[in-house]
Image (cartoon, rainbow, N blue to C red; front, side, top):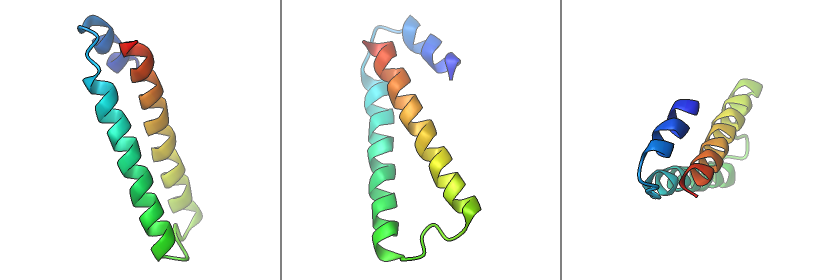
Amino acid sequence: MSALVQILAEAEKSKTPFFLVGGALAAWAVILAFFGLTRHEFPGTATAARGVMAISAILVVAAMATAVAVS
């Protein structure tokens, strides 16, 4: 994660990385909502639930890091 922040700090303060990560987070939220609404048993197992939470946390931290880096 720190490599991404370092690359962004050396760049010209382009907001593109934040938009890409923010878009990925929004798309992930829509996908989760779709599966959650159409499959009552989603995510199914405890392992799958941990995976969903881990991906969500990574995307949130990446969005926050890129927001700070481009500000």
